[in-house]
Image 1 (cartoon, rainbow, N blue to C red):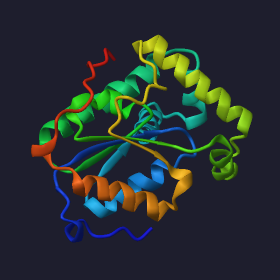
Image 2 (cartoon, rainbow, N blue to C red):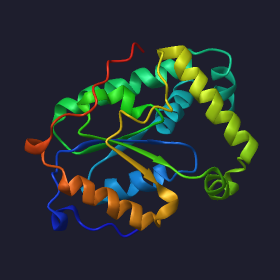
Image 3 (cartoon, rainbow, N blue to C red):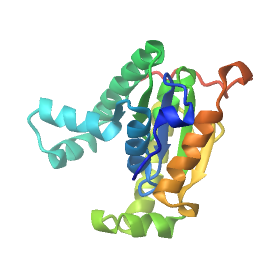
Length: 203
């Protein structure tokens, strides 16, 4: 993608943004575009998971197998993401945090919480090269929903906490990025009457 320069758009350079969404919704693509446009870093849940694998001298496959037997690893990933959210929320600098639970973990520390989605057939087509079939994708979505409800008592299908929900099937990747950047550009803290409040998760 060729993101417009943040300076050209008069963007607030200190926005802490979370991006969440289901597999194949274009979350990584948007995060990469936002990171370049805002000239800031971003951390993903997948990156933290890979760090855990490296620390334990395990392959991703081995760590995934271990994670399926206990909630300890999932919770450790979430604890690390929450710590990042706490630090970045207080840092007053631009940053992107990505994970399925990023919006919940960051809570009201985030300036903008974004959820991406797309129809199942579109997401399946986009992830074909990842060997994630439609049935597997549906199972993963159901398992994730049940897991987070069991862990934290939250309904991840509840979109009310997000400031922006986008069906990425309606625009190209560049179009989605432009749409989100326009929303960030239009954001004015003095006009902000309040995000939907969330309580801190006990991770």
